[in-house]
Length: 585
Image (cartoon, helix red, strand yellow):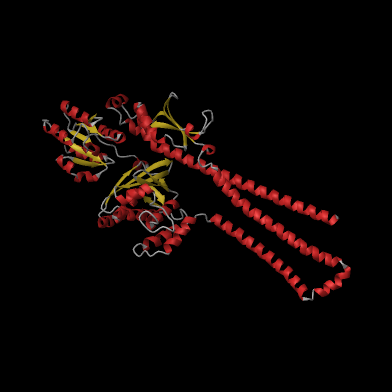
């Protein structure tokens, strides 16, 4: 009786210990998974807020500078009905809300719930104060220092209200955890019951002194041998199960350390393919990707490295009859960067080589923008667009970088070159984004501070002649930059807000030059280029027409030829070239 009570007590203790361990493991996994999801969500939301501020700041600065509330609301319009953003407010220096987008009702957030906000001051940079009206510049008599125009307040959707906080993934993890533990517990109970019967039978036989000799003699029989073999077999089987369990634990640990499953699957996939023409690129990709992140760093000039790569691809572009149009911008583009130059160059080659082939017979527009992020850190944005049908189709399907072993190798699936470029990009800590008609690579870079005499641009000297110019540009930021340069060159600047205003001003005033962007050459409902040329012909003093545009191919168009002696200046505008063109008038 006492022995039975001990067995019952031991069984209860074992069940209690196992149940306690089970609930501790379950609670720990749920807590860690919840915290991981929350941390990942907060990190993504923080990056999203920073990205919104970076992309919207030029438009917000322009809207606050001129007090144009409709422009501010138009700038914030893309954020409406975005479930990841609770609200965005633009306040002026008196804390008065001038524009806002509120999505709290969309995601079910009550108005009295306190939300953490990212507050960033909207600063009018000193470089932009030179681009204001001439009257304000003359009143200031000098470049004013940076001044605060207002503030942007961005509140991201908290994790508890986000679409990521769904119960499906949590339930799946719990089921995946509970089922193996439950099956293992049932198995232990069955094994324990079986072993208990075997041991009980042996003890009963041994405790029976009368049958001890018979038991001893029975061990020598075939039945006894089978019993001993069965016990030995169970012991060996138990040891094997423990060994397999230890192996499983080590494999799980290794899988956690090596979580980049797609990359390894992709490397295995390309080794099974026959790519005679691109084997060198793929071998170089493997050589780059196997090295630790940021192991080799070089100090190189960013623009020179990009230009060198584009030059090496010029023969490929001619062969495919693809017009590769590149442009540069950003306040850090002419700086040195510290990066793995070999990997960076190979990423560009893999990306552009394939896109040149995809866009065969069409233009491929590539824009590089390197801007300061924080202190010496910067973000390089590589934007690519084209009107090639295959490119547009892949952009709409968002499948350029898709990898699935079961799909065929095509332009828009399992594209070896593009997927290789994607993984090198992620090695740099970057990511790619799809937009309506383009996609963009974004990667962080470390820029090196230059000596003061190199950082400061050369002063722009006024021209020796006084010129009167009329400026039209559909891009307000580009127009402000152009007016700033013209002011420094000493020209008298007048600006037109619409194409019709240009015609009106030409009838009343005389100008030495008219500077317009390529949008000016497009016919509108109440404006045509032919009508504009007729107005020019009727003038006694004909102004010089200067086209200022990113689009170099406009010079080959028929409408540009109609302008006769028109000149072309590429964007971003080089003030020296602008001065030379104006001096030649």
